[in-house]
Amino acid sequence: MPGESKEKYINPYTDFGFKKLFGTEMNKDLLISFLNSLFCHTESEIEDVQYLNGENLGDGYGDRRSIFDVYCLAKDGSRFIVEMQKAEQAYFKDRSIYYSTFAIREQAPKGQKWDYRLDNIYTVGVLNFTFPNGEYPVDKYRHEIKLKDVEDNHVFYDKLTFVYLEMPKFNKTEDELVTMFDKWMFVLRNLSRLLERPEALQDRVFKKLFEQAEIAKYTNAERQQYEASLKEYWDYTSTMETAFRKGKKEGEELGMEKGMEKGRQEEKTETVRKMKAKGYDTETIAEITGLAIEEIDLL
Image (cartoon, rainbow, N blue to C red; front, top):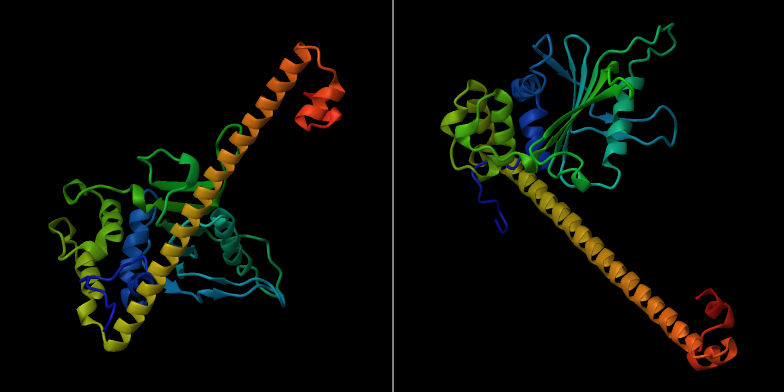
């Protein structure tokens, strides 16, 4: 079919690809492995998850809703929101915080006495962009954020955690993959460009991942869904890149205009200074230059 993808494996940055690999009951072992690689420093591993409704409505009529890529509940009650973010958004951090509130509010039992105890909430953002203005060093691509005291830096509240992965910064080669986290980052970054499963990814979980990601094994309906999702992905990223370039150009033009205006102002100041030095009165300077008397006085 025209415009059909020529890759062997799906692009996990597409909605279809990400949900196919991480958002289905059949592949929840892939999600569990990925999450455990992210939080390997915690005391206990995630053994099982239950997928929750990814579409959450507000409490009242007219409230904003949220639609999560993946939303699940672990055995210990911890809730995980996992989002694939295709391109930079102006208020991405605000959106991330806002989405976490749904997982907080829905823990409140309706019509029952409650002591306000909350289970852990983890929001994971897989970002196909880097944070602007060099917020983090170029060699730091995993960021874990909690509520902290600004004076002594201790964790004030440890049940609300945000983990962001700046995928463009991950440039390790196959030979440099050591941990499961390395391997998962490599897969997410390179899957659609690979022609076969690399030797470094011989773990059983990656064997299954590559089987599930192989486009040739999909039904016609699944392929059509993937192609539509891939087109949407490229259209979206192209639109965002165009908007970025336009904004950058307008910013440069605005800077140039400000520079020209500053130059014109300096030229006016110098002209008035010279005319005053030669003894011209204010009215004469105004007549020759076309400037207002008030403006000449200011200059």
